[in-house]
Length: 303
Image (tube, rainbow, N blue to C red):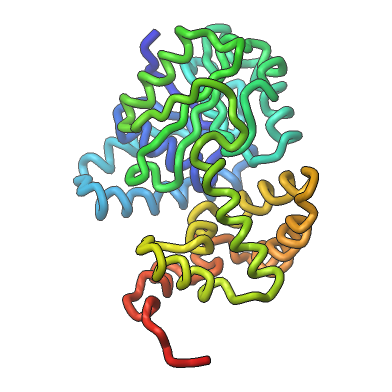
């Protein structure tokens, strides 16, 4: 089956990017979210992607116009998915929220519709049964700034149909992704299996008062030549997503320190509307974060 109509459930930072990239690639896309306020926020994010694609992808005004023409919005799930070939779930990284979403989706989606989760840490077998169509369910995880970091991790579970898996892989390639295919389920996939311990270590240094976020980032960037450090990465991921991941991870044996990390992110960042790039304020201020300045990597001479 060749996909034509795509639904992205969740118009947050990454969900709106996935939807925009898909529409930019020629597909009809509907963004579903839970209420009018969420849809309004998604539309504001779409406007920022207009600018990003114009500046970074050299998209012409005509291309931007056509991309937006292929985007629709809905707050009624049944209406959103009534003719969907593929639903990409990008709702918050909370098990209960995902369970509720799939239970509702299973009741209203056409029998032919394929489901894919964009979860960054959870495996598809966690939700396969509740989808009501385990053979038509898998993971397709994107990286933030999808137009630039154009990677998609494809991961099935034991019950995923090989044909469905290949259809989703083909779709990801059609929208310009480099597809990273996993041979078995792996919590956190490849990217986050490597990234999360790195970010955890930086957050623990911050929580324990060893150094401030900018100093930690500077150490990493000077020593490795990386374009940003762990706190710049956290701003890009989004502090709400990071909080949900840390809170879930803190329940694992030996991860009690992450409880303190999660609480500090909540009280000092999220509760102050410091959400990262999404709110233009996180560990850095945007659109011109300090780490992007050449002087950030210089020794300021202060002890």
